[in-house]
Image (cartoon, rainbow, N blue to C red; front, side, top):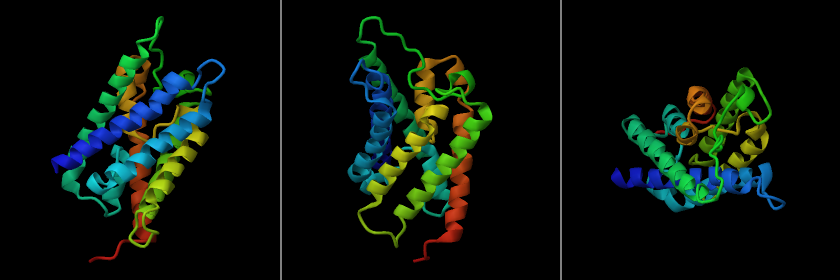
Length: 230
């Protein structure tokens, strides 16, 4: 069990360092910045690479909502749920800590939003709390549908990482302007702890909405295509 938790810690660290790191360090770099498309790809690539690196160890959840959705969908043991979530949150915080150490090495560094998720005046596009809530529920729902389908026993073998990574890329392409895209409470928590203030105040939505979306997806996919009992 400890090996699984260490794998989840490392994987979530990489997701935050790679995804949020691309947003903080490279998204708006003068003239050569990677923009929304680059950040979207970065998040997708972190998951894609980790699926093949640690998927055989822990299942590569990297996300409390994913663990919850897999549990509801009958793919994950309830007794492992809380330990996985703790490992994911701690891994995310470690990734954000490393990002802070790197980013603060530039003269004149100001932490700002630090790629935190937000709504209202803290949404990149100024989207309302309701819009953010709907976006996060729907995007997490679809993310779990992709995961549950790609990892089903009847799905093509060896292709799950590609589908899941590209799925997360697409989700970011859609929703970065709305919330900076969470669909992952561990990712949201790690950045909010460093940004503080408003990011902490709005963090509740980025736990509640992804969990609701994941629960709905778990129930729907279990109905659509339950795994056969062995």
